[in-house]
Image 1 (cartoon, rainbow, N blue to C red):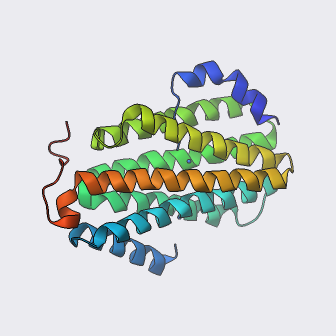
Image 2: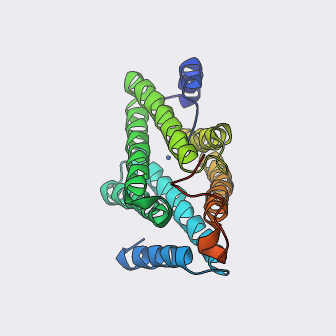
Length: 235
């Protein structure tokens, strides 16, 4: 199955919704979220801890995505637990923003990211089976979902997360992840690992954009000075 061809045939449709975005044992999850939430309460040095913990969450995102790609395309018996671990990461990311944007917003982000992962799994299954119709449909919904994620992030922090910039970053994330999966499906494992390296660097940049945006928007929670704005005054 040639995903490059399918990506080209969908280009006009996907242009309407361009964007892109696609997890720790119980003790690891508790430690990660505990550090993130503590960073939201402690002034001064907490900004560095928050930055690092956000990077950890997003590195988990692309690491477990990589493992899902391998498991699904190889038909491995660990596919179910691996997908569930990746889905847990989406819960962790949503929980990480709750101290700033409240529970409802964190749950909404988790729901959007959950769809990001489940649709990605559909893409892999359809590609492995050679089901072009199902693949086309899943690709369209994947990019549309990423557009919804971009709109959500921009609405939460419009000054620091401009819509066009977030859309571009998420589209790049999806494009690179698609390239990672496509080259793996073609048994071009060197090419696939190269795409993973690009995905890794790109997600670190996206993570830094998100963490720095929160640190600026909620400046008082990190340094004890006035916030730029808050969820009650975002415009």
